[in-house]
Image 1 (cartoon, one colour):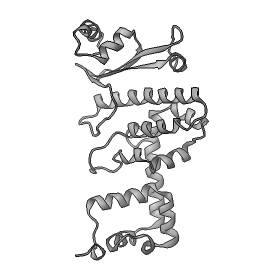
Image 2 (tube, helix red, strand yellow; image 1 turned 135 degrees about the vertical axis):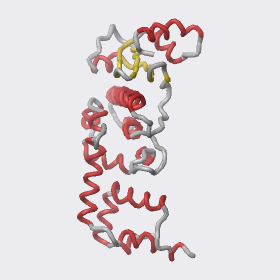
Image 3 (tube, one colour; image 1 turned 90 degrees about the horizontal axis):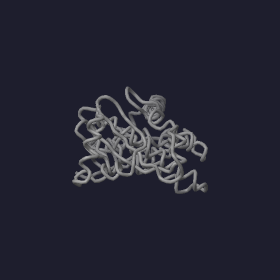
Image 4 (cartoon, one colour; image 1 turned 45 degrees about the horizontal axis):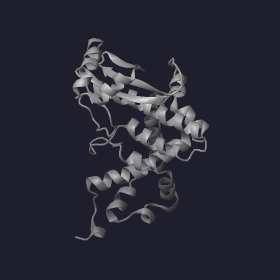
Length: 254
């Protein structure tokens, strides 16, 4: 049987079509203006497109976007990135422009937006990956650096919390440096002092600030730490790290 004679899409093709309809405003507009036959790639796709009610599709697409932004029984972009979003808006990326670009990006493709469509990264990781790419086009170098570190900061907070509290974990993570601990997960990063100060953390002076992120069933802990702690978490199997990690265990951070 030839492709043109098929009357049903397979699961992957149906998923691709659904995501195009939900995420691509231009595709929805073309469907409304030109009709299903003009857009269908083959007979099987035409069968699906011909059954669509345009008003219902527009409503579903708006709800899909709203759920990504505000959350639907869980955290969304707005809750995960409360500091990053104003910085993005200041850089010329307000909500609607930002969301439209994100939905058509390779980063969004790495996130599995529909249930039962395979393993993907989390929404927060996908958004942070996308938004980090925007920083390379910013003229303000200091602003771009602040945004990159703030995105990473908020992503780590969201990821470590989800890894501890979501059972089973429904996503994979490509973020480097996340360590499994006795009681949860931890990571360390070095952030610029002025960026950390903007988050409301007291800093001692200029230069990179070592920061620890530790998530357990009791909650998420974040704070500045010494370079010795940063090195120990970065190299947990090094015998020289044992004393530092034991101290973190006593405090319930490892």
